[in-house]
Length: 309
Ligand code: MRU
Image (cartoon, rainbow, N blue to C red; front, side, top):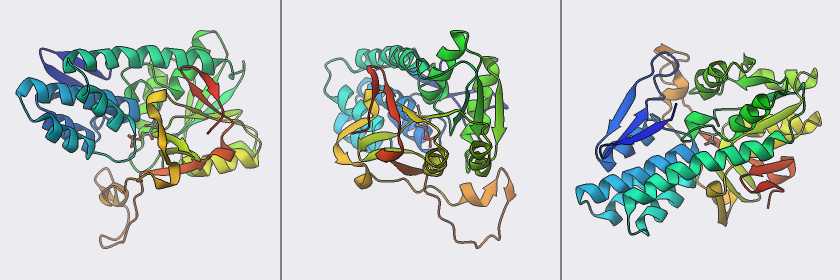
């Protein structure tokens, strides 16, 4: 199952806000529809945001919209995942926007399979792997980066299991990663984010593999909570890997100069429709944090496993 489909000059996106209860599609006929889908997390995850943005640019060309204006607006939909900017610029510079977006769609799947093949080498038979957020098929066009590593190791016959952090506030781990692992019949357990340290301390975790929204000089930006996982893994000498395609690499900036998205406080205040704290509570809701490079064992890319730069 693909996270998105290009059909009759329309982009169909699995509506990830509805998973795992409902598998429904959100239809984008204009680039403004794509912006809405990215902002509301119908589509999320760095590579998926990138490819959806590429199709957003293709829709702008098809509708005869001003491409520079569309590019500016699409780029302002979310600030942290660099794939968004990379994808928009790539389509903007191409002669054939629709073909370029389709090419990026196909490349994403090949890239993830390659990340899986390299990454599987660091997974041993019997490993329990902790992951955070969703760096799976749903975060890409298909297969996934961190979950792609796990998928490949499992397909190769390794007897492995997965622990997913639920990943508050939007629970991409609980809703999406657990669902993906269950679809593939890969053994999976769900924990609350704050249980990760305890599981590491008691020897229940052999490796950590997460995704990234941006890899830049000094470290990696990924879903809020990644830093705490990395600190705990370091304390208990557990290898900590980041799986990310080269399209997630930013060679221009220090990771500390990257804008960390602050999202709507209501995501924290409410769990579904239940309010968790007094209505007037002052809330901080950073969506990402930074894992410094000294806490990262290796970055698994489509070209091999590298050290952070
Ligand atoms: O806010 P999200 O759900 O878009 O955040 C996603 C993540 O943090 C993923 O780990 C990252 O984009 C890598 S996806 C292969």
